[in-house]
Length: 163
Length: 147
Image (cartoon, rainbow over all chains, first blue to last red):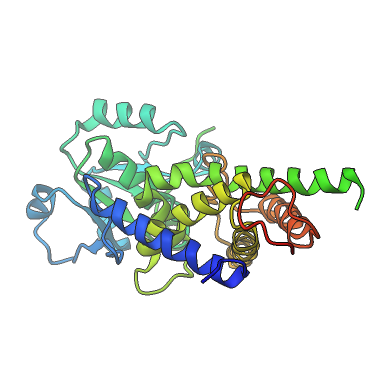
């Protein structure tokens, strides 16, 4: 291989990237698994206490979100504050700055108490991103309500608006 | 080819390299976050977003370095053009499916997918085209053979 042809050079770049990427990942403090594991889904039959004792991020459905809301769990809106002000799940909090948000959650419920994160709908992804960011900041019992604002409003559950 | 054209090609090459190099840093520092960004596009199957997040940033770093230094420019510019076309496709399909997600492009924190990101990538693709169609190797260290 004389590396004069584009195809040879492309092969070298891709091979080197694979070797370096996998090699560096192997020596990271917390290596990323080769295949992504989906968030574990909390089943309706799960004991709430056992869920709360288990430090994980878990996905919940609408029914479970409603139950947790009725039980007074804190809801965190992962959408931008402008959307939050237009309407949100009653009692939910939102903050664009994740550090400010973390301080607010900590002052309300501490680090060990569970809470629910949601965003606009099943495809938004920001609830999951925020859950992982908050987990990195020390919060361990986090539920992700994937259906989010869309599913909540479609079910005609109560909403709140900031005037 | 006049001297302006020659230097335009070198500038396009170095700027394109710098963009890929810059874009790779955050992704290399936090591959888990990059994997979640990829996952949000709902286009990579079977949990393969992790392996993409492990390898792709290093590919960006290597081709960025290659473009800046003039090392294996043909390979690096063809990969960069391929990646830019892939990024345009990914952003466009996310917009068509109504996803309001973070770009995960690595250039600026918190940027959302949108028409501006597609236009940005088209401009970068134009830069790659300028480099691809060059007739001489100016300020390239390897290979030295004529085009």
